[in-house]
Amino acid sequence: MKKLHILALVPLLALAAGVAHAEGKIGFVNLDRILRDAAPAVRAQKKIEAEFSKRDQELQKLAEQLKRMQDSLERNGVTLAESERQRREREFAELTRDFQRKQREFREDLNQRRNEELAGVLERANRAVRQIAEQEKFDIIFQEAVYASPRIDITDKVIKALDDTKPAAK
Image 1: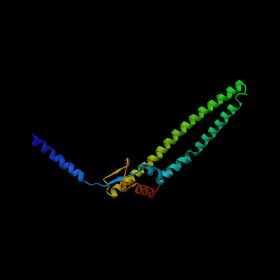
Image 2: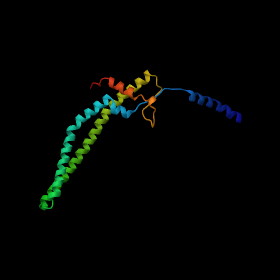
Image 3: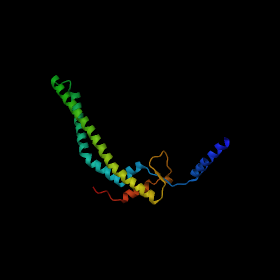
Image 4: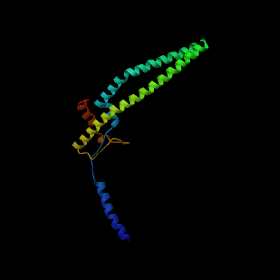
């Protein structure tokens, strides 16, 4: 019976030894750096900023208007007639709700557009990673890691590949 167990373990030990001696080429890509530093990511960020700057300015003006209304209510609230004070408080509350709604819509729209733009950048980055992996014969390339040695980091190569490609035509 003991002999049978030992015979069963021999192939497993041989397999484990083979895996331990197998060498492969490993790479790592820092996705955060790509999304921050690569030319397509920078262009996407500038495009989003331009697209949303007008709405952002409108929200800032509305916030300033709310601040002025609040200051006025605090300063003059005790001297105003009760009906006038209530009217102004209602206007302030309505404007506050409108501001909060517009602010929420702005954030949702901004996040949606950012996700759309970054999805395109990620798609191009993944193509560049695959191309580098095939050209340089990598066995595996990781995008997430707790630690990766700079020796296996190919992020700069991916950023350069993305910077060398022309923007996708729409």
